[in-house]
Every structure is written in structure tokens, then in C-alpha cells.
Length: 578
Image (spheres, rainbow, N blue to C red):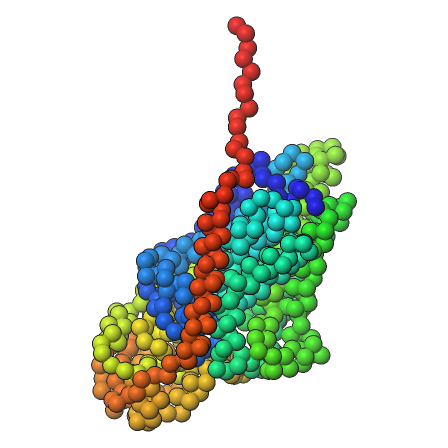
């Protein structure tokens, strides 16, 4: 294997400064007081480490084990600080990781090639659209992919201490099911045949919490096939779906697409960027098998991302989603374009180096080379200028109304039963959050198990959820006795948000909290809510323990092993005789 992949940068600070500047430009508004509540991005002051967080609740474990991690972190650090740290670190590590993945040039520096790669990866439609979707756990995995790639190459080369470092870099990705699969693809593509068993085995152990929780879920892990078409990649301009995907865009929700992506220039800029990347990879067989692995991975990402938009392939995917447990992970195909983003960014960096080298041999080479570098650095910014400052202020933080604290405090009193949240719907649009669509925060805010609708309405079509208990409770909303028999001891009505009408029978219940934003009712005579079986609890908790043990073991392995990085020494100064 070409050892240039794993060499340290002789001049790392330009990429570090670029990463920090980009992170501040993208997340700037979100760093103010309060919480950014946008679609799936919901943080709360303190999240409970409860059954849902562990994957033992009624919904499929899509947020396992990240909810458990948030439960631990927010027990020590306020949730708003955790959110700001996560957003800032995600963007900066995405830029820096891609910059460091580019092999250094003959002078040992990554230079302009690294900077271009970092911007292509970190100032990308993928990051922008997933950020506006609130898919922060997916972006944490996205930011980890270049680092996973680098450590996979170190392990492939047999470098000392590379295995625990690879496992540690996989931990952020393994916080979610999709992240684990994205990390697994990178590992399989780059680590080499001899190292695959140990690397894949370690990642499998890190992924056990969501695997075990999903396998033992009462719904069986199947999903609604309607979601295949609802979540299929979409064109964003006249270039069509394929060009949107090649530019790392194409998300299914047009509300999460920056306005600049509809420009008539975007397809042309995408073609230019891909051409630069092709020029980079086409140079004199640059980096052997790792390069081929990265390119194959990118091709697989494009194919998976587009499968939902191809009629025949979409039918096969619908069958799989409806019959194969866990295949629902494939419905939102555009997320797999993260695999393509890696070779696109690295190729753009290599192409920059190759083009600048070719220009340097001509008259006026330094001036032309500088202009070329400036143009390529500006290319991602020109293609999507509205990512700056939180996508034009769309990452504006707000404060939760005081009613949420009052409800949480009331629910700590003695009493049995779980909480039914109304209006029955998965998403909210509160006036105190400027009517921005957001996931209902009740499940993370409250100290009791929550029953809420997990059906999704996409483009006027309803994608059925998987929570069997929610389906049973929904028809009983107007019958307090039926609610009590189903283990519902409280009804929380979230006011000031669109949704289905609240059943009239709820108003007759004893009112515990009467606020401007929330009303909490008590359901008399409620039975205890259902509990997961002992077998399920032991298996899921054990899976969490195994994953935690692997992560802690990797840290201890690194800290107790001798450093593999040679200390840099200043070259001795020549002594000149007087």
C-alpha cells in the first residue's frame, strides 16, 4: 500500500484554521442562548435514560444508542451546551478529516489539495440538507467517515495501535444504525482482506445496541413500503436526480433544500467539480488498491442513493422493506451518498494539485496557479452561498416555555401510567419556535414513558409507523376508562400547534397543569404501563454493556500503549565561528 495515505502533514495549521472558520460560519446562530429545534433535531435540558433511550420502548430503535448517550451527557452538562458542542465539532471535524485524508504531496504538505477537499466535503449540499432536516446523528457519522478511512488505512498498513484508534473513530458513527452501516462500508472498502475480520468484528460489537434492540422489537422490524417512494431522492433543478446526487444533494424533502440548489448554474458547477475529481483520480495510478476501494465505495453510494427513483429497482426495494426486518434503513436512499462524498472530496483535492502542477510549468505559473487554487476553493461557496450563518438564520435557537418544567415536575409525583401526547402526531409547529417544523420533544423531555404517533406524512402520503402500542391507544383517546386499561395515566395536550382535534373526553379529566402552552390531565384508575420482557431487557442492556466495554477498552488500549508518533525536533542551528 502507498504509505502516503497515512503520513502526517508537515504543515497542518491551514486545514485546522479552515475547519474552525467553516464551523463558525455554518453554525454561528446556533451558538447563541437556547436550543435549535428544527425537524428531527431536538435537544432538551436533561434527557432521561429510560426504556425508550435504551431501545426497549414501542418505537423502532432508530435513535439507539445515541439517546442513551444523551441521557448520560445531559445528566452532567446542560443539553443546550451539548447541542452547541456537537454542531460545532461535527462541521469542523468533517472539514479537517477530509483535508487530512488527501495524501500529501512530495514536500510532505497537503496544502491547497487538502483545503479544497475539506471545503468540498464540509461545505456540501449533503451537510446542508441533513442539517436542515435535523439529522445531526447522521452528520456526526458523516464527519467521522474521513477519520475512519484514515485509521482503516493505518490498520491495513499494519501500523502499531491502529486497531483501537479505528474502533474509537467508529464510536461516533455507531451511535445510530445508519452511521454504523456507513462506517462499515468504509472499513470494508479500505481495511484490506487480512484485517477485515477483526475490524468488522469490533464495529459489530459497537453496533450491538441497535441490532439487538431491533431484532427483539415487538413489531418485528418491518416498515411501510410507501416510504420507499416518499423518501426517494429528488431532482433539485434542471440537472435531474443523478446530477443532484453527484453533487451530494437530492434529498427528498424540498423544505430542507437551500434555495441556491435550484439555481440553473448548479448542474454546471457540479459537472465542473466532478471533472476536477476525475482529473485527480486519473493521474498516474496514484494510490493503489485503497484508491480503488474508495472509488468502488463511492459508486455503491450513488447506486443505493438512486435506487428508490428507478421504477424496477424501487419495486424490489419496496418488497424488501415490507418483508425483511431492518430493510427500512434503505428507504431514505440519499443518505448513502455520503460514501460518494469521500472520493469526490479527495479527488477534488488531488485534481487541484495536478492542475496547479500543470499550470506551474507555464509562463506566469505562480500567478495562474494561485488564481486556480482560489477559484477551486471558491467553487463550493459559489455553488451554495446560503449555507453561511446557519443557512441564512434557519438554525436560530429558542427557549422552551416554562410549562415544560412544570409538566416534568408534576410527572415526578407518585402515580401509575404512561403519558399520551396530543394532538396525535409526530411533528409539531409551535408559535414559540416561529412555527418551524420539529419533532415532538415530549419523549425526551418527560420523565415517564410517552405514547405518541409515529406515522409520518410526506407529500400528502402517510407512511405508517411501527409502534404497535400507539396504534392501540389512538382510537381510545375519547374514552378515559379505555385509556386507563391501556396503561395511560396522563394526557398531555400541546397547545398552539396544528394537528388532529383533541378528543372532547380529555377535557373532562382532572386538570393538573393549566398553562398557556401545555395542559396536563390525570387519568384516574390507570394501570401500570406495559413493561418489556426480562429476556429483552437482559439482552438489550447486555448489548449496551458490550458496546461500552469496547469503547472504553479502545481508550485504555491507546492510553496504556506507547506513543507511535515521533516527537518533532527543531533542526539544530548552525554555529558560525566569530
